[in-house]
Length: 584
Figure (tube, rainbow, N blue to C red):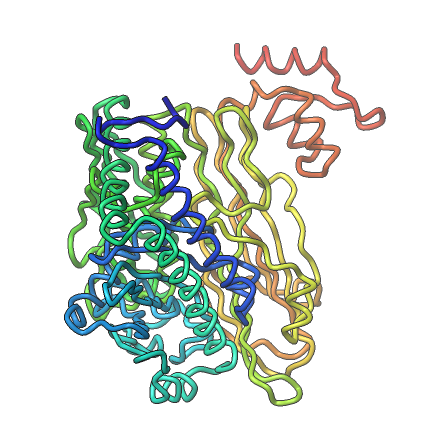
């Protein structure tokens, strides 16, 4: 039964296994809190674009903390790269780092992984790990997220699996290298120090468990916990229907060519095994939205995890019944030296496809299409005082309509779990002013349960002269899909200087110079609706009208709900007539 401790091994102590699971998770969560409290940059301390985890001495994930489910499957391949290069040369006081998708198993260069080996009585008992999205990583465009990179060498500093500290002393050459190559070294190096501090918290926590249970007993118990997660996952998969389900979705373009990029996912469930097959997906593209295979796999894990029992431990055992297939050289399994800086956009569509397939398998569990990271906005340059700045934000509209509720407005998707960066904080730290941050009426996909309405956020450059504006946007050609009769959300759009005498409409992916006093408005898509809009409770439609999320015209046309514009009340007789006529 979901949420209950199920003992599948007669020799397993159910109380002990639950205590261990919660203890490891608590340590990983404490690492996350440490990261937030000590980080320097907004993407980490405000948006929470990072993750923490614990791995055993073999490099298997035994716990993941707060923050991004998308990162869940990315720790093991990066850990493997460290062990491959250093397995026989790991000592107390070491710190390892990597960010390279091709040499280190990473996902893109701004995401730096930090690993700290944990020893007890000279015995390696595990690793504490963090991954954090850094504000800058060098490269040709500030922020490390430009869509028009054409090879990874343009994207920033590549860190192969590297020891960056020995015997507790950081390698000064590594620090000098990073300091010389990034635009905001205080923030980047500060965030690296925050990552190490978080790992030290994980180190002390796991050492305390080893001291309590004993080294051998702790190792045996963590291996048992991994097996337990696998058993629970397989048991739940057995309860799900066998079959094959297909889904496809598209990215608008790669920023160079206007051709849409097709992502195709086939979900195959047989007994207690689940396969997600991406064969048939388009080839990798010139622009930097390609997906390293490690991130594709991690994205699949996040989607499947969202429909499974939340009590299953978040560890390596959950991965074992799941297979991901993709052709090398395809968009979801790009090969060197393909650029991947903006791979988060690819992940948005990969997860949309997997959820689209899961919605056919589990129609009562899966949301309509969310708006989950299609937009990234980077503004960078030098302030009036000559100080470098890099503002990097990823924007989200919210969830698609759910099988029993509306989508939540203004919230990132289950796979991403981002937090909002408050306008006030952004304005304090950057030479920008947020002119507008609001919902876009009539953009949420109509349905029995409405999709989240789109957001718009407008940035004005106020305390710097010329700055680089780089935008990673999508969903301007095809809106987020609805499910089970629900309609697609409204499409996205961009506006440059919208309140001027000569506003312009840039494409979804672009880079340009933003002059002092100019503004850019990102208009995000609305999420998809779930179910027939004419089955929506008229009281809910009225509530949306009163909250300015739906206009009177949209209520009438999309939902068949007539509202008296004077009394602001539902005209029940006319509503009934309209809905009956629509069904005739």
